[in-house]
Length: 460
Ligand SMILES: [Zn+2]
Image (cartoon, rainbow, N blue to C red; front, side, top):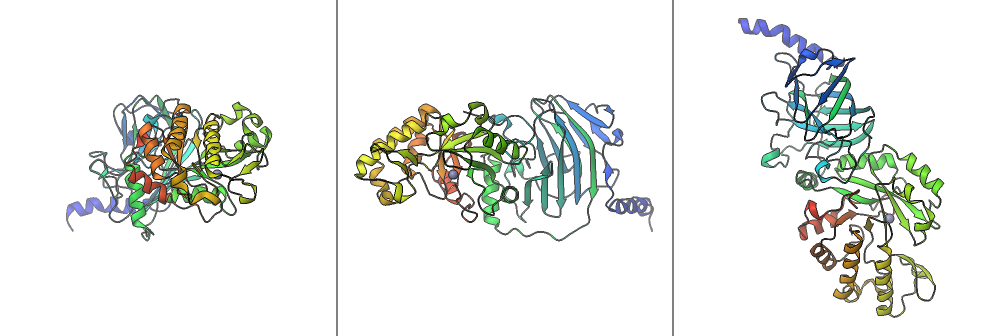
């Protein structure tokens, strides 16, 4: 037996002993952290001020982390911007993955990646936690599986494919092994950590990706920093909020979950709206209001509406020139009459609807079943131009509705030309037809939509 091996033997035993499932306190010994001016740790709290600071954890010679569960409590000052790196290496911090910490308000493209994002691979665009509040961030890695939760809610559930799609800039974002690092980013004010632990986990089976082509498509969008969001999701039937969260985390599609609010809808009063808003506080979703009918503007107080990330509406519920209140998807309530006259009334309604305090016009250019076959003929250039002009004037985004396959391609082209923003949505009516934004993503590709063409809540 040579000398080197004898020297290594106790370390190898020690490393093996670490895998007993006992958590290691990463903040227990500040001399373990290396980097530019390692801050003092007071009362078990590590606070890092200023931008572009890097601290790397030294796990000890020949030690490294592969399968683990990392947990930390984090506190952000307004403006905080940082990331936790794992499977990285002090000589090459591009190696491995980065998890973002950013609790700024939504709507700022420079702060698109919120807390919980697996940076550039699975981005989180909604805000879950306020600044100046301790929250718990967990990262669990087992073989090819990365799971991230914030305050116990799932945000990322990513299975790294055998040959993951990466660009030149992201080619080292892959699992392997390594250590942890903390990096502060552009504009960081201050971020604090406490109770930071890591528990090593035993080797396990690799997980299988059910649909590698879909994973590739979604990853490409995240790498481009294209907001991968379905802004029009409903909690319906057995599709409960916990199931929606789980689904969002595993697909890599952020969800905007909307409550139906308006006359003869589940939420009709301020008290109901307030109770609903409180019930979804802190959840890993965009919090949305679907405003129904034209009466809603007077039914809910603007202060309450502002507590949602956005509100949207459609032009499917209105009263025609004969005084009939119609819901266009219900044939018994809908009087079409002469189609050209109907279209004039519809376009006027859309022009009115988009002046309401909404961010997105959804189920756009929908026609009742009776005349749906005449879509291309009835949606003349002149009518499309009127709708596009109204959207632009009122700074309202246009939904690309994946389930209804609306609006038509000519509308999308004209809206893009005019600089109208787009929001992808589904409007699922049950638990089966939520989909994965298939058609909407086809339109993104067909019309070469860029992140700058897309709506972002808070931007209105
Ligand atoms: Zn809806």
